[in-house]
Length: 125
Length: 111
Image 1 (cartoon, chains in turn brown, green):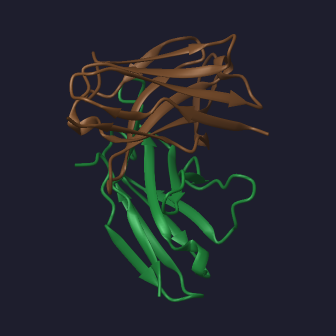
Image 2 (cartoon, one colour):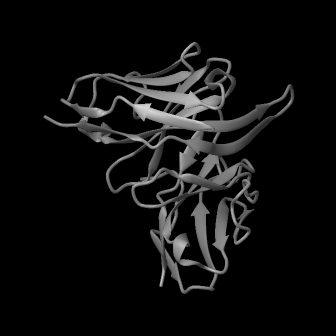
């Protein structure tokens, strides 16, 4: 069964650090584009970061320089290292698989087809 | 403020059809045929309902359909059922740096 399971959320003081994990089963993380998406309480979805199958990484401006996405191929796990946390980072964090097909001449994006259950991060003193 | 604009709410009676709009720019919705729609029930993870503007993943009822004209995409839910009551989010690919942008979400109520 294709599945993503997040962990690592919790209550953290402003300025602190936290690392989220997303364990995958049923598919290989390193062969896919993988994203982190967050949802603040009562708010909509916000894309946070993506790691391409080739290893390139991109971030939303709101987290650039503070968050780092990475993966451990041996553990088939995706990570999000979050530093210098702020109150506005409080959210449920989801990991998701992006369905992307890249050819020599084109790029196909088919959406985020697998999502984890989410892990809650609360930044508060 | 979300990158894509959706109405905050929509409603319809069982059996009716409802359409939710999603307006972006030429840098996202208008620039790529990579609009996706997600359904989210309270306390649950989002679920992909539509990708590539109008395609449905396996298992999604054909009551859900998508379209696009210029910078505006739309999701239509036909034959409304009680279980369709949920939040719906549009998203669009927006190039390698911005990657993906989401709409603010629309709460669909089945009356």
